[in-house]
Image 1 (cartoon, rainbow over the protein chains, first blue to last red):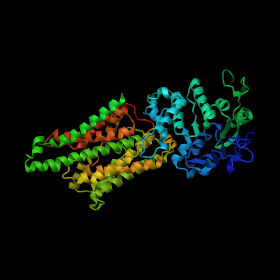
Image 2 (image 1 turned 30 degrees about the vertical axis):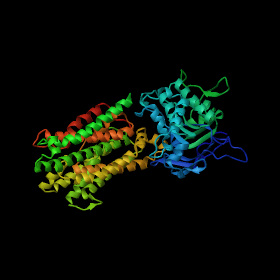
Image 3 (image 1 turned 45 degrees about the horizontal axis):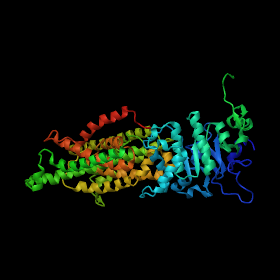
Image 4 (image 1 turned 60 degrees about the vertical axis):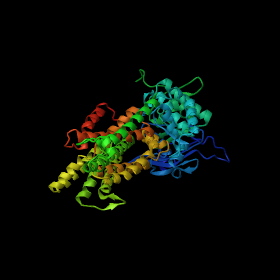
Length: 293
Length: 332
């Protein structure tokens, strides 16, 4: 376990140390197929390379936080896993099958990308928005069935979004919108949620709400979570595993508690952190500033 | 209750469409009484005017208005911007160029019953939309502002080529092109209606089959793709469908602006953004709107006639400004 640096990612087989994300559930003699497998994936925007030969295996039911400095390629990795970006090299496989052989609807039935619930205009009632999550289950001419309605009701119940079901999405608060986005992903029937900074613009209460909801989905329903976050503490305290990216390469991966160390975080972020230990023994990063030089 | 409001709105639109269809042919330089038409009391000249000029003209305006509104709705939703329409994005200019070029070159062939001008207009529309979309895609990320600017630029480009065509034409041809560019529904006989009908039916059917995808595209390309929409393929199909409709309309009546921008927007304000309702509402609204505008255009200063494009632009210009100042240019 430890920091791997950037050099080893460039050879197309990015390092995974120790158990690494998704590998913890594998048993000797019969490794299960990872639900998501990323092999030597490179992505470029124009001439600018963003990911260099990233590899990772995500086990079903894992709760992985993806951390790293700005521009490390975290959101790009999420989008690459969902097939939303063309790959310059490498391959993504879902349940052992290369992504290229999946149709968009097939992907959507397994994986759901949940963007930040930003200020985009969403002129639909909340329930209709969640119903749009059923799209991959509908054929072009088929009407919405009772099964679809049931899935929507269930998703809204689980996420606690029923009470504003009839309100227009763009009248909801940031926290409500984020939960609604998650509800739509649940209604979609996805077993893997790819969450792009789900708590960034939320106040502490709504952050806790959303993180609690995600943890419940993971523990009780076995939903696999890959969450991009800038909040190291939420990554360390809520996720089981951490995947740290730096300059488009995997810099470190392993159990969340092992990351709370300057040998890991300090090197990933190029910054000296101060740590403290909570009463349950979990380490967390202390806030900066407040009179220190 | 919104259900009641929606039913009332659709009821009103249907009644308006029927009334527009029944009453509009009666109005004009010379008004006719419905009784005379039904009892066959019209003179043979009036009979000819009514059945060979007025009725086809009203049918054409209903069809063209419906096609423009449906195309406008599709563009607005695909690009998440109320100002994005075939007209503002230079698509209609491309169509005009295509049609004018076929006229200038004297191409008179027809393909599968479609005249050269329709095919030229369709290809021109497709070229313009490809240019605008291509330029917008060149920059990383998809910016609505870039797209509108590209649309304006492409529009200018085609307008200047069109101007060049005019310059190279003789006086009569120039007059024809200028008059045609103002947009007009003054046709004789049913040929134009019958030529436009299949284009609108096919294009409209494609749009209607994609109402769910349009709803998802409104939520953003990333969310739509994440829900299973093949965004690139859907966009390509919708470009094709709208080019078919706009090309058909441009070939038959010239570029008529603002119908495609105002109709879907007004409907959206009343019944909301769900395309399962919005598509039929905008279609009906556009049909009625253009028919009413045309009726006004040919009666207000009778016996003279104002090109219908002048009327729609007179109404549309202030509406466009109002939209702009309302700050509703949504983010792309």
